[in-house]
Image (tube, rainbow, N blue to C red):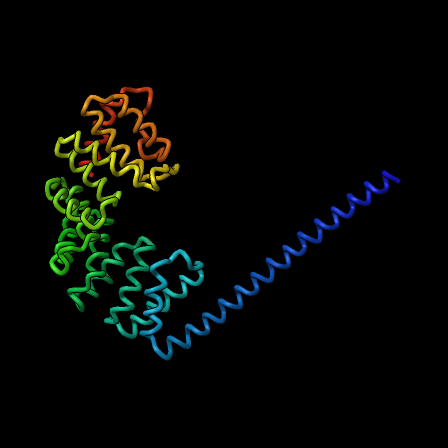
Length: 296
């Protein structure tokens, strides 16, 4: 009797499991059907809106493209085609040009994004958003000087814009203009006192100027600001700041501190210091890495 009871319990458990997984499959199928129906309805509505008011539809895309990865690939493809169609009808529609520039930026089509932004700036020379994004397109194309020109125009229109100041500081630092970088970075810190990217630029600039104690202090201030000091494996931004502090510590003769920072950088971003080996002397290798960064 006991044996039969045990078998019965097992059968009930198996049956319950089968019913559960069948239910889950049905729920998944229903969800897929619902999403497909929603997509078809959205596509139908989009066509109607585009026919009634293309500009309104484009304005919606501008808002949506601020978060492009929230869309499924099929939806993004359709939106791209709609933008192309709209711009064939009206090549000077700034809203659509900005939307497509955003689209191309996120698709890493930087030359294409630059073309759209240049057209926007022909139509609206004082479009701050277009100027700022154009500067970052220049950065992706490794043309920091052209990016600086865009940022100069931005700051002539709004001298206190902290984002433009911090970005220009970064561009100056990449060009080796460390004193200019520090001026802009300090100005940006007034509104963004804990901006890790500004602080990293300050640290990097101090290293470039040979002011290593100040560089370490800047990195000491920056590193706790990354996720409140909680390092996340694979975060290349944190690795970059750790590497910068390692460079400064090395020049101050702090070999142990240098090695510690590099080890942590390697854990966070293994490819970042690919050629550096913990067992080797860190000095010469780090010097090579630093020289490479200054030239890049």
